[in-house]
Image 1 (spheres, helix red, strand yellow):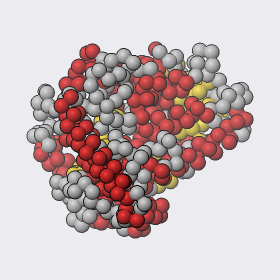
Image 2 (cartoon, helix red, strand yellow):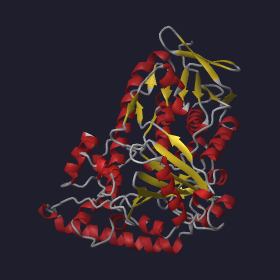
Image 3 (cartoon, one colour):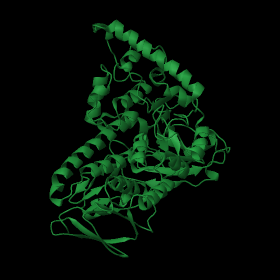
Image 4 (cartoon, helix red, strand yellow):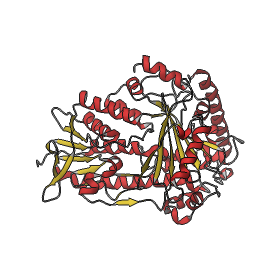
Length: 518
């Protein structure tokens, strides 16, 4: 094995593998600099369920050079403006939004304080602080056709067909970015006496490399099977370990397309409902310790029927996906790093899987040294950073459950058991009784879940912060500023409602004409 790092081998296709390979190839000159090879098994199916992204995907696609029109057309993609939650608080039809746009004036004034003190009357929190609430309610797109590729009027990510996305990335990586594609099965791993991987034995011959990326999914062939890095289970905190996934057509060809992920609670978990251009992706996430498959299937059938797919499961067979909620105790070992499901998986809530792939691949592209001797310190920093990111994911996902007031089943009651709540989250909840989270709490500019995300979940779920604004020297001026900002939100909402197109209309026009050039 050479001392310089000239050849990166990515093991595993699917979204994680091809997205990682594309990000690396877009960073490095694959002809004169670092070569990127991706090994894909012809006999191993991909999971193919991760259909939601965060807004970060826009900058990723721009960076690797895929025009937004091509992406939307090839992947049946739609624009995701956040998540609509139903039934999480009391088990009824109550709803709240977690939108992607920050509260208005977020860097200058914390509107959550003024909402908590009653300054905006009975308006739901998201409605009071961002026009995206009204736009989502109306089923409108987050931009117009005149807005350039990946730019936005309101912040958005995507819903996409995972299989089509992997195919688009594969073609782009191979034909435009110079990634070498090897279609073969790995049968062995060859390492040096010091433990670094030197090559992979495959059915079509050995593939040598200087650095290896494990994107082999739940099998985790390199980090899990070869290096034996254990999974740090989170089952005692977040109970879900199974999902029933199904794809169903719209009830009408020109049905409106939801502009949010719909997350609807049930007695042993929750349903996801994702609208693509040609179909809906629907699934029931559940805890096998709290619900039998048969009962969850009946609940999924009832959900499909009441949301427009009258055939229910009589006309669609769900696929069972089982997983162990957790993440690796370390992600980077020797000259190998795990990205995607091989690094860990918790559950689909808030679509953290793909954003972790983006962040991991970007960090690898930024920090990968040219020489083997430098790997140790970088691996330490990478492992510390992503252990922290996983801990943040755990806390943020748990927040959705601990705020529930449901008492109709053990699943929801046990989520509020103090022993299942991370100490860090307990401390934050105590602090938030008297202080609203704000942007100054954030430690990184690329936080996965900024303070605004915590605000939307906290106050959407009925949490109350007791804030005494009267003791502040400029209390009256701040109050007037807050009222003014909220009025601007309502004015913006009216203006956007008059000018933004329907979601399906924009997608159809963009697929043909594309967006304005920059």
